[in-house]
Image (cartoon, rainbow, N blue to C red; front, side, top):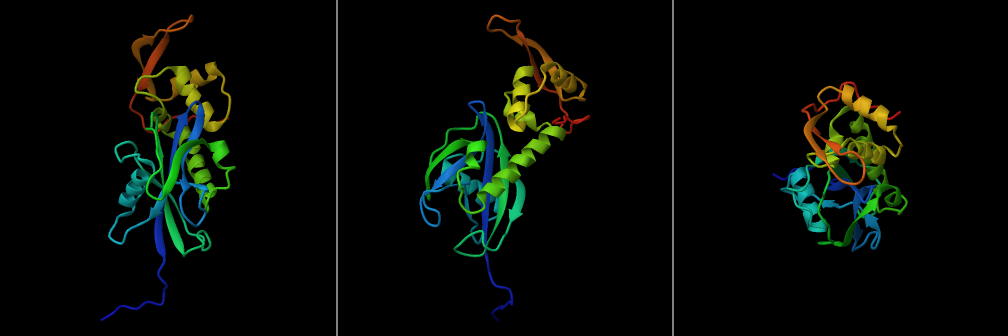
Amino acid sequence: MAYTSEYPPFYVAVDLVILTIRDGAFSVLLVERGGEPFAGRWALPGGFVGIDEDLADAAYRELEEETGVGATSVHLEQLATFGRPDRDPRHRVVSTAYLAVGADLPEVRGGSDASDARWWPVSDAVRQGLAFDHREIVEAGVERVRSKLEYSDLALRFVPRQFTMPELQAVYETVWGVELDPRNFARKVARTERFVQETGEARRGGRGRPARLLEAAGATELMPPMRRE
């Protein structure tokens, strides 16, 4: 017996907000659309979910197909769901957005239905006239990251395993878009329980004193939080 419903079917999609710090700029990964709608416009990687496909599986598949970034390079977490009725001119489409951040993310290339892929400074990306509602999705991802820097160890994903205090400070300044006093920042880091610890080693270079190397101390939630002000 065929099943009928009073509710019309709609499409399910995934979109991906991949953020990193690249050449000193807080940057997002965009693809150039190779087909309509919005051919030639820049957009987030993403696409439709297959009928027998899990959302997360679709997200990783689309990321690799459109940019060449494999599943082992990033960890995706759900950001939000976007379902404005007119967000896609073709169909009624509801999209689950995924977020990932990291340091040393690989070079990207266009593939599948993306004619190009590259990293954009966030400030430039949101002025590009992105396809669909992707500016809204980018801004949601950026604000999620800025907020999580306050209360979690997320900043450590933007630096190598061993890093210096100035390198850590640069993450907060770049993501938040603010300038921080080095002494105040170092004091805040020092009083945040189990955030970072010294390795006992130093990095030499330049004319100044060797920079002490730090590493994660194990805390995933910061107490007290690192505030933006």
